[in-house]
Length: 326
Image 1 (cartoon, rainbow, N blue to C red):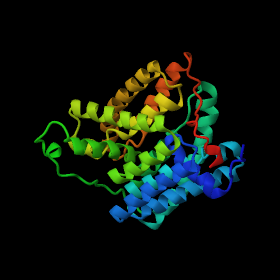
Image 2 (image 1 turned 90 degrees about the horizontal axis):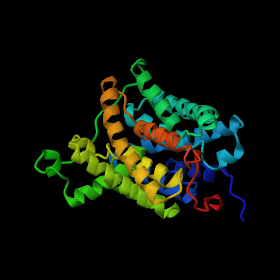
Image 3 (image 1 turned 180 degrees about the horizontal axis):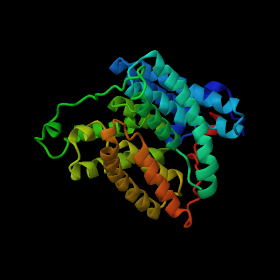
Image 4 (image 1 turned 90 degrees about the vertical axis):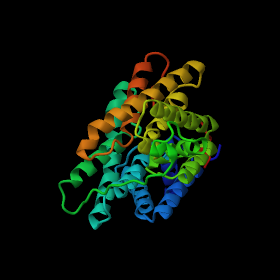
């Protein structure tokens, strides 16, 4: 078996891939391409710069703090950092202080990840996943309201369709397909179906079952959100589906062996995630703080904990992709 590459570029690419549980550098490259496309399409290159900076800083922080080298090389200290790097320029206006937040936040996410591992994972067998990113993101956005050098930016694109104008109760088939892809892209806070397609391609490179789970979770979440009468603007932007996509992959493929029973369990978790998304949006929106992937984190923690005594190993794993050689 070939010795896994441990150079910084490869490890960072694996870190990008681990956002969707893939220890695969090629997958990570697809994800960065998705971020680059969205940055180009919106003219906001700070998002790509933040992603790269957050990815490198979080990985180097783990090395400097002498954390477990095998865990570092698998990219497990990079994926929270890249999400911090994408989120900060997405929600804060571009200022010199913003880049300080990216660096500090990415480094802090690594420390938080280690703390989660030493407590949540070690004591109860629950993987930290994107919990450190959620905590870091909430702290930075909330702190922005206290610091004059930081300004919370707002606004997201709207798409003029019959569904959004209330003419139709359901998105048209083509629009439904675009929403499925936006759900996937929004894990990286990318509201572009092209970016979502690139992310999906990256997932499929590493794992076909995970790709199927991503699409299935996206579809289920969209149907539930539309059926429950969620805000069409938010549904169309993919903001009711991205956490559910992660839940479907995590519960249906990564943390439990695929099976009929597992698929039913994952389906329930996916539906619950949509309700948690709606609840958290109401709870945090008045404070001007986005939910990030908190609906996924909360649901996954509960479903993994509930199954820990009935066959779930509870350890954060990665899809078997032979990715160590990439």
